[in-house]
Image (cartoon, rainbow, N blue to C red; front, top):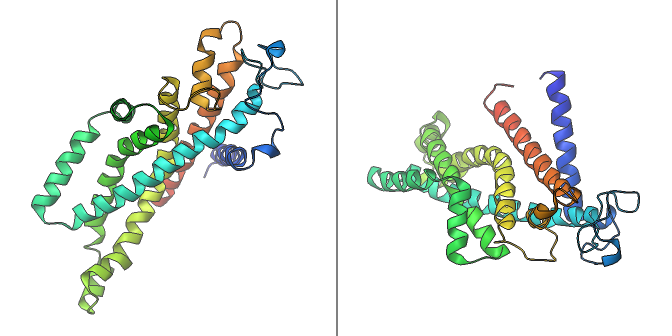
Length: 269
């Protein structure tokens, strides 16, 4: 690996570590209350007392960005984990099923994959109604087709692998051979994809929150913070810029880390 790429990879890992730390232990990074208002301190620019400034209600933007990591990262992780689990089950079953069943799953998955993930998530939330739980459901359903497609392909490849055929010759029952030798390999490939998908899920959830379909005020959430400051961007840019930077850095870091892992898994790094 090139030295520059090593540096970027280290910075990406460090950024994700900080986001995880903020999500799990926000009190270690700030003692300010993210929802406490003080109209006398409204729209203060970044300073020593308020590193990221304050919003129109006098709330500390830095505290809200730190505490918002838990909501944004939580939705992304939940949606990614659920999409991986459902994709693994459906894709593996399709890869092992008879040809007609496999074709039905494949064509259905192709139809869902034809829609952009964000658009599909938006349609789901529009049907279910706004709310954090519905945003998680929408992002999960939108991400499933990618995992189904990969799980199906990997299952079909691994089921014909030499070590699986050897296990069958030695008398290992087919279901047990699949669980022991096929599923772990499929899960490994999906795990690498999930690292990239985490960034996409966070971005989709933030986008839905920006449109007013996720958490509501005064909850600290990055997409909601972007939305609340969009009309003040010329007067108080810090309200939207800092949560926007948090989203950007998190998504880019997760994507870069995921692509690096995928390249190593494919033997290109």
